[in-house]
Figure 1 (cartoon, rainbow, N blue to C red):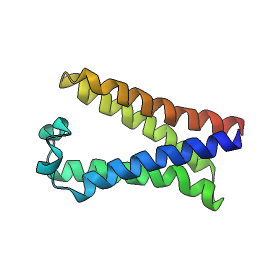
Figure 2: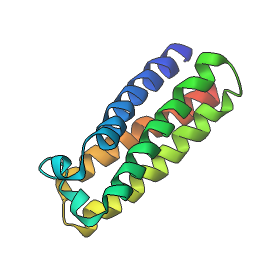
Figure 3: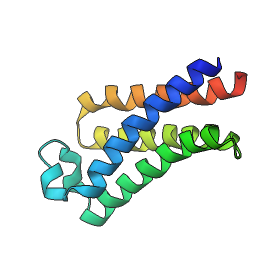
Length: 120
């Protein structure tokens, strides 16, 4: 189970680091063609969303890498599940149902980290 936890944590961390840093480093106008949802948010809000993703990614991996309060890995993963539910509601409101698959997969991967941590 430990190998599955590590693999899943690394995968989720990589995804969120890329997604979050993209939102942090690129202007909202450059994100809009690929991420139409940014139209509903200010530039500061988009940066905050990116920061939340980066912090969530670090929260998933750093506790198990350092061995300091490893339970925070499960806490961060659970927070990312909630984050994906909020993201899904934004996509539903905007009628972007094709994005729900991405939200669902990310929520399931994050939830699997919670479960894998509990059984490891």
